[in-house]
Amino acid sequence: MAQRRHNPCRRRDSVLAAQATTAQSDREREPAPTESTANARELLDAARQGDGDAYGRLVGRYRPELHAHCYRMVGSFSDAEDALQEALLHAWRGLSGFQGRGSLRSWLYKIATNACLKSIERRPKRVLPIDYAPAADPHDGPGERLLEPVWLEPYPEEKLGLEDGLAGPDARYEQREGVELAFIAALQHLPARQRAVLILRDVLGFSARETAEALDTTPVSVDSALQRAHKTVDERIPEQSQQATLRSLGDAALRDLVDRYVAAWERSDVDAIVAMLAHDAKITMPPIPTWYGGREAVASFLTGWPLARADRWRLVPVRANGQLAFGAYGWNEEAGSFLPHGVHVLALRGARIEEITAFLTPEALRYFSLPDQIQP
Image (tube, rainbow, N blue to C red; front, top):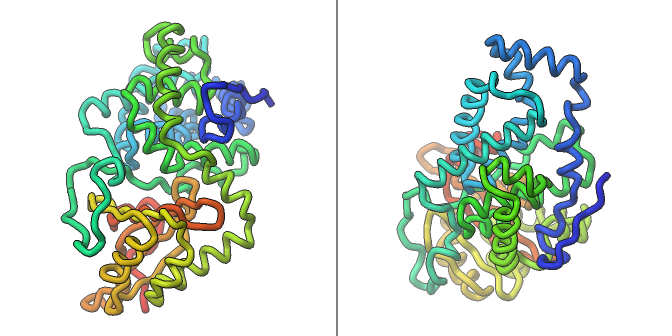
């Protein structure tokens, strides 16, 4: 395995510094272990002749990582789907132009990156409520939903394709770090091309020359953009990634935390939730721009709104953005069942909950392969 690159401009324990060059090792491993070189060439030749099945097999192994790449770029699961589909269609139509001098993977990343840049031009940047408006007074209650597509969306870990067992532990660790909410939110504050440079260089391990080729610029421009991107992102990401925090806690402590969080919500126990919070904890609820900061403010909001005694909840543990997360279902009297309400993504600081990002978009649950309803 290649050695980690050390960049003194970045914090040692930041999300970016934790990106090992395992990503570069994976990129240079052409073709996949499950496909012989001869077979990959046969698929490429067949795809060039118009064989759609061969093309699907050829690019299928790259689809999960390309989708995650598009998500990092655009901050939205649904927009990433659109950008990836556009990229794969473009690649299919232009396959005759791929001469094989570089890797197929690098060629696909170039096409996907440029599809994302076009998508970013057409849409506003995606943010979280903390970057949209100041903290609210909990006694005022939440505001109206903002339905314009300006919010970050959660990313289901299952879509990273880590369950196939091909990626080693370090690679799986880094792929999860690469979609953590704090990192994705920080990326959205970069100009689009700086965003692309940082992702290609630091997350995927592309060289300055390869990145320049992907973006039709020069290595000098790439290095300059990367320095500016580091400064912006390092100011916005925490000292320790969620992956490092989860590892430090261990499986037993995490199971206990998950069990307590689920139990507290399902019995509407505000005190139990507050006991799990850091003193400066926050709760945000996109697409509602309202958010609350500080343990007392969060407690007041929970007491007056989602955990009022008339409400009933069921929570299903999932993994989103490489973090602890829960599919939340609220009781619907008319349906006689618990219906989708959203996805809670937790950020931890040690054993305390630092932030609850409650994506109040029932549609997001579709990304997690969860049931449409839960019976009582």
